[in-house]
Image (cartoon, rainbow, N blue to C red; front, side, top):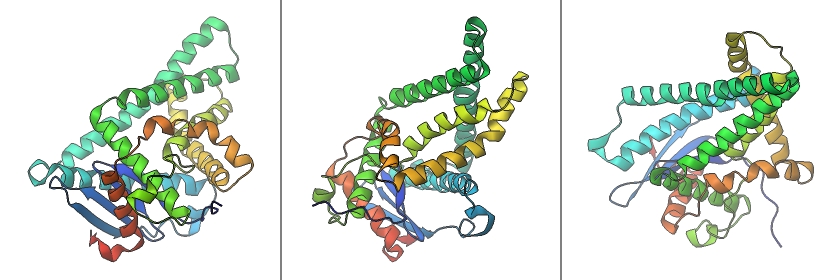
Length: 293
């Protein structure tokens, strides 16, 4: 009989040729070096999320997202340096430019573009304000899924998606008390309820509701209001995911449609990639096994 999952604070993300894991107190990073060895690094998590205002419902969702982005960029930079070798390190300036371009892309492609297309459709079909927001949200979802599907065909991104699958399999195995060996972990699902990919689809649905509550206005107002309200949308989505991931009744079925996207953003990993993901979780739970950073 399958053991019920353990509710423990473990999560992670895929990076370049590696996996980042979050344990109860520490972060653990494992990256495959060009020579084949696994480089391990660990560091203590931030204290600012542990109390006060930042633990309030909704607020904690946006705060967690900010922290994940900060740590995620740090881990991506480290993994790029390790996997590319000393001679091909990415400079801080190149990283800043990459992050800036990514943020502009998010605002332009996933916020502004669906809004302008929905305005055009609304003017031709005389849709209500709520109908316009449904169209905008659906367009945002289609653009997002299409974008993910397109980049998944890029060899380097497909490789990251394989490590993403390794991360999920490892967490699923750990939460079910299975032996943490590549042979054992390989039998577990690469789909996980707390995945950030599913979270982003929930964000799209919640945004339809939230953006429908504000009126129309100028282009600047409509774009600006979506940027300003994004923390609220993220916070509400986080609370939904949090509740759904802990529910074996309503949550299990409500989150199911969002989980389907993980079949695009994860791939079946190799035994070598599972070994890296296991090493990342191991060092997150026992930071003495990694180099403190």
